Figure 1 (cartoon, one colour):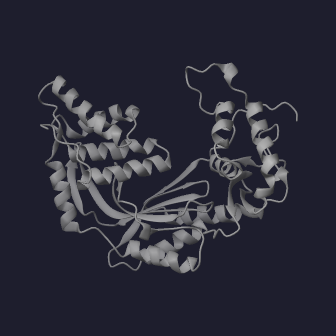
Figure 2 (cartoon, helix red, strand yellow):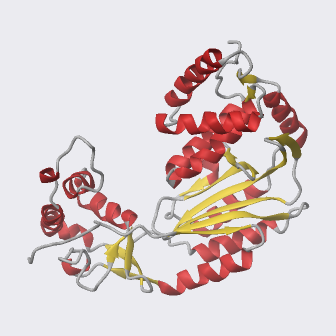
Length: 366
């Protein structure tokens, strides 16, 4: 093969975001995405092989998910070694000679050549508009179109006795995240010098290229969201018998349940009354509290680099008073928006546990 000169191993599609009042724009966007989708069985090695321009012979570039999916089928650990040799992430203690994009691509192509036969049972999901190879799915995979999924969810929510509206939707390649909430807030609180409405609602995910379909109960505010615990009853795979019926049952179960408003108000008021970080007893005491709570949060999965931003925002929300549990939860909800989707969801579920008492951090006086 000719010399390979690549700036990136795979494409990172932009995130399309739609907020309240933009449901029609969302549906139009999903329709266009459906029209651009092409699903075909892998027939020859050139369908997946990388060439010197970082694309397949037909001109498609892998997305990060598509690349990881192909590597997963080819062999355990392949994506890790290819990305490491390519230099997708370079630590400061590693020198330039330790990376070689051309060699990384050759490693990928060599393993593909060795094990190509196992790929012919897979189907490629490609975007014609953007010339992207977005994933591989098995022959038994039941591809659930994101437009169809969104439309089905909207119809079920329209049957509720209370008005439900879109809070936010995000589309990342073939992955759709839907956030719907009650039109009226369950509570309005004073925080950070403003009135903050808090809504209860639902969080749903579908990926056309695998990963399952699942839903969670959620709370939303302008600062972020907290997500309830995962449940096997609210998760289904893109395969198996009676797929459409199981999907309808899962969506009905999710949307027919809601938070107990009285209980929710009590929990939020309790969080307001729970001091976590003292800001009125001097810098030393504040730093001691933040260090103790930061240790607990890090053990629960919050990265250390994020903690300083969380504590800074929490202090801003408290307006000079002691930081309470709700300040901390809202600050963490806001800051985790910097994370990738999977990590963000984990931390938003952690936040739910903090708010509802599933995880204890102690108090400012603990």
